Image 1 (tube, helix red, strand yellow):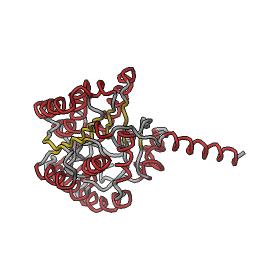
Image 2: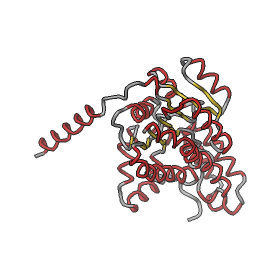
Image 3: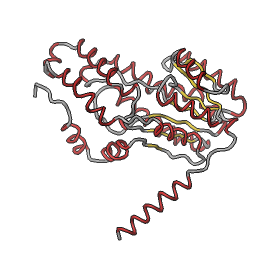
Image 4: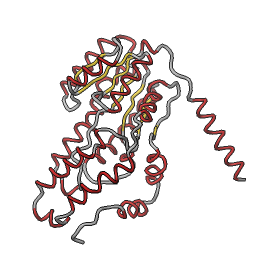
Length: 317
């Protein structure tokens, strides 16, 4: 019986692997618009797709990001400045893309730009903290997508949204979780809306990888900055040693989870853009596959118990 089930499982994965092998033809005429290409996944994806022959439009937040990409890519790659928080900036890039792609339309947009700070317990934060991150991680994704959606419909192309395992499990407080749950909701609703037009909408849900989003120094500095502005009564609730405990445990916790092989995520992004039959969802990272996704399907009492067991204790119970 067990051998029979194992055989079926192996047959399924072999069938899926063969089915997902074919790639789209005529890459040289297909434009791919990627946000957040200064570093990390976006930077690697832009270079990877450029080598494969796609016409990449890589948006960066900084001039240095643009310059570095131009040096490492072919003359076909186009770089542009983009601030996803600005309606004017989003509209300007969309107008440029419309001129470039013409009647063929835009093959794909990859919404990769994102930030992870400020991150802290919910009662440490203000509505302004939430708004600043949602402007980038959620509103930016929606604004960029809507700005080029008519061009994608014309090409019967793809929308690729980068969410997170934290769009499945609320393992900490703050706006990052809210933003990624929001991306998941936008992705699912858009996928259903666009299906009649032949547009595929795909979601990447990475685990922990070594990028600026998981940089211990950046997260620690942000936590200290938020702590320093807290009213004394909130500090008393957590205890005077709480912040130091957070700063001490961050490198250990993240160090045990972070994967340095960013190509695991980039390969999923590439498949979403280039495969004839892409998946609706990708979950790169062993922590995503073996821990976070299974955890997301468990009852709330189980997930709460597991996550609370690992939480830093407060002084006031």
